[in-house]
Length: 185
Length: 82
Image 1 (tube, rainbow over the protein chains, first blue to last red):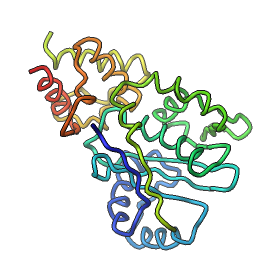
Image 2 (cartoon, rainbow over the protein chains, first blue to last red):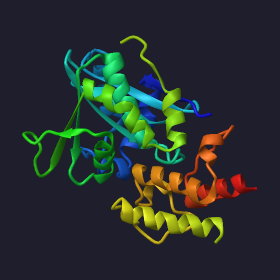
Image 3 (cartoon, rainbow over the protein chains, first blue to last red):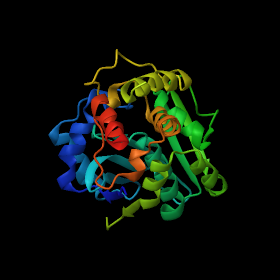
């Protein structure tokens, strides 16, 4: 049985995360596409420890780091999430696991009432996931370059079981094993 | 139809179904994350393979080894069939 665990990023993770983040497959789907240097990554991490408005997790699949799940702009009411898969040895369809875990963590652990996401209009893979999971597009904010999504906690409580029925068994098993090590900031 | 052919046929069907564009002719060395099939596509592919082959190796793995390339993906299904 797979095991999915999210651990708050540590200094030991940041070089691996930087290398993932700089791969063209990931870089091309980001809002900021500049190459990230070692120094920039270190500065980012140093600031992160003091920043209560964001939480950055490294996702471990069977105890192996495979990607990043992050929450930003966290306040009492809402936050925003993003993710990427860095490791190329991956459970097929794993992006859906990250997406479901993001909703579960935002509403069950962070306790926000709304989870937001921004996706480049050219990045179709997450758009399909957001549609499957029944996100709402925010038409006021959405423009030709960026699609703004929103999910309310009450709708996730209503939709979660239905959404899970749409997923293949191996992804449901992975989601059922998922846990977060929040640690201390 | 052998397992490799079934998988290749279904990848193309799922790509059409999900509006994915397979970036180049698929070879044994094609990295799955670079193939053009996205997460939703792979989720559907695994579900379709369970229907067509009655195999669901990713649910029953005890020591999980996840595939990087098309060859590794096919091998997982071939081994599950043995």
